[in-house]
Length: 406
Ligand code: PLP
Image (cartoon, rainbow, N blue to C red; front, side):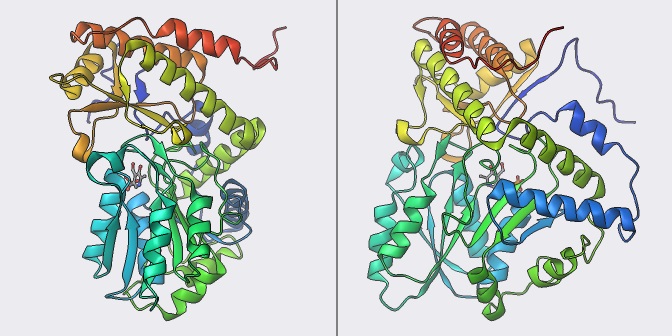
């Protein structure tokens, strides 16, 4: 048997920006026996999660749940709504936006990649005015969809989706709006209906605190109407049959039963805390993290404070320092995983995840591990980051106790 219990004492610190640590409560819920996916108990479970997940997306419209990683849900969004050769306007915020564009190409679509030049585009959010001008120039309405990433996990930049909606409307353009919030959902404020998003793509292993393995498409009426005309081949990903069977809580194939137990538990946990409190907790922890990075004298990858990600912080290394060597040292000495630099940022930065099941002390221990690792790796630091992070957390501490002592 593969030996996975080789960890030293204490818990591993999984501080990558997803998969995020899975709380014991969810692990326990997932350990219930697998049941008949056509039986009566399953229907009740299915209806529970299909209804609950809508509140997280802030939508009244169907949310399709796939037994797939986020990449599958990306593909589902494209193949359900588009036809071969369709022009798609995609915005380059980072590595994940780039991967989604590559997928569009491989499916036979014609993506146009818009964005700020060079690395600048990987430091700022979507520039809605650029989308508006491009759509205004498309007087024949050849562009069928605008695709953007809400929380760019490779950089730690969140984009203003409402502004993208306004840009599309200002241009009077009928393109669909498709948004990837795979790492934003249940961590950063997100409003599928209010922001007029046609397809929102998300996944389980980030803010929902579940293992990887389920992903989502929230679907507007306009997207469903487009799916009637779209001709890209689709079978497993097709929305109609799934949405039809979901009415009674079932799926046309064998769904991911134990992950759905986990999802039911996750929804309960999020609702107990309150979605807005979850968002506020993420914002508070993210600011503490940034204060530590600034005190270290290191640069934050996101260059625009208005769009700092509440999910993760990208920490840029001084010239000559290999960020992956720092990560390796931290992993080996302190049993903590940090996110690697992706694509254009390989070796230039590492990413600290502060999402999902994370609290003040989780974050402070994470920052302590980073700081010790940076020093041991010979990275010159201006000062310790912990005092600033702690001062912020104390200043912003909530009077409502997390627990009540006897
Ligand atoms: N989009 C974003 C923003 C992501 O963060 C990820 C994964 O981290 C993906 C897409 C791809 O999702 P998955 O790895 O679950 O297929």
